Image (cartoon, rainbow, N blue to C red; front, side, top):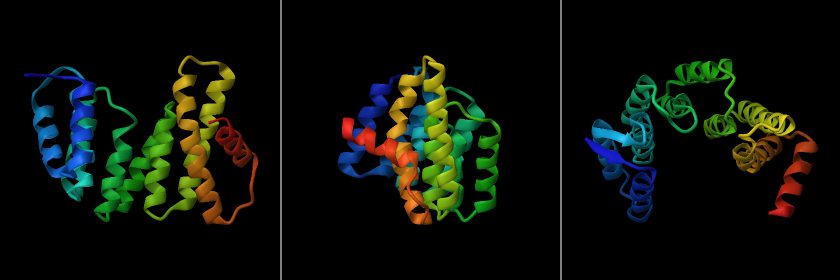
Length: 192
């Protein structure tokens, strides 16, 4: 059994960015997932392996690993179903992908990054309307967390700029007029 930390995973991914060898990284992460014990969850390693398979262009293998991450049920970042939906879109299985996205919506996630990921997936696969809706819902979640003063609001605030940027891009694509969320993005960009 292998003890794997977040730093180990980050180092491997950093190396992959330098080399561009996503296939080797995907294989290494897949091997690690089979032997991980302690540190990060097996599901998280499977999810990262799936992402590397997608970067390598093997969407079927990515989908397989995302399914394993979902079945594992361990702690992950975001929602593995959003990543699986992306792989399914790539495999021309749009109905299955949309079913997964509806399942995520029904679960009413409390992590703004889930909204951002789903919005990015929909945008990448030609659904600016859906992307706009998900980005807007994510912004509204961050604002609700802020209003309630919940302890995870700081993490949520980190997602706000990405959500607002994506929402802006989709709003422009859809030809909709500027609104208060655009002004919020402008304010954020002035302070950063």
